[in-house]
Image (cartoon, rainbow, N blue to C red; front, top):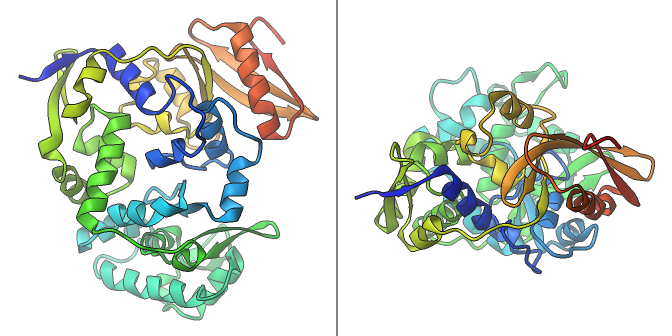
Amino acid sequence: MPVDVGAAQVLAFRVAGHGLAAAGDDPWAPLRGWAVQDSPPGTAAAAVLARTTAVEPGWLEAALERRDAVALWNPRTATAVLAAADAAAYATALLPRDEAGIKAIAKPALPDRSDGFGDAVALAVAAVADALDGAVLSRDDLHEALRRRLPPDLLPWCKGCQSHHARRGLLVLAGLHGRLCHAGRAGRQPAFARTDQWVGWDPPAPEAAGAELMRRYLSAYGPSTPAHFAAWAGLGAAHAKGLWGAVAGELAEVSLDGAGRAWAPERDLATLQDPPPAPGVRLLASGDPLLLGRDREGLIADPALRAQVWRAIGGAGVVLADGVPAAAWRARKEGRRLDVEVQAFGTLDGAALQEAAMRLAPHRGCATAQVVGLDGP
């Protein structure tokens, strides 16, 4: 018989699974969930801050500079941020092994192609590996190098750039092969390096990597379904189902409020039925891992509010109060002051919110903060 759980239990379970029920003292813990992204920029640092008791401003940037952490594009073309030691396992889990899986990621980059995606990607990965061999290149220099190495049909015209260049889907797949990662800045542009040369590359067996990805996903986003996992990961349906199947024997069926079906790890059922409380206020930036789940109605019921939070560009963040979404927020800098504009739709402790804004301020280059919109500035 399926285990019956309610929406409040599911939300509380996920809040705890994302490290938001009780802040820890290890800033690496959020990165070990394999769900932190830096899209839009600044999201990754805010995610670490929301989950830790204390972290110095610039900690994540320093970890990336030391190469203890690494950033690479995931199949959704967002910038994933991981402990460098985890990068090969993470990418190997997501790397498609057949034509259909490759097409699911590469098709947007090759809109005029109907077949031969595997061959095209093999060419692109080899070209990226050659261009970056022993080098760190700016975005423009990388594209110029690829124009010398790739056939014209892999370099479609970009109206925005007014040039022919390889689109991001091909670069994503180069990253999943360990041949491309972010490597800081080159002036005002992002720079890129070969991941295997930048931080090393020792991938586990694909089956083991895939099972580990699923366990980390389900511990944070369960109860879930293969379709929701595919959308979260940016993978084709068959690829996602194959990864899901690797841990199917570890899962229990769950009935959501007696209606929808989903699955959760058997080992997590006790926590799912009686999740821990999550006291306090957390500022979750747009793109925070908790906001990346695909069953968004369980997080925010109001369609108008969902549209604000999950806007394609410029979405709002969410204020989590005692484990429940209570407001949308945006921040803007006014000199050395960070103004946190809040649109409340639940109960909020103004003092706790101000404290959270003050914690965020130095991470946004500000000395102080004020909350705007909650009973005025």
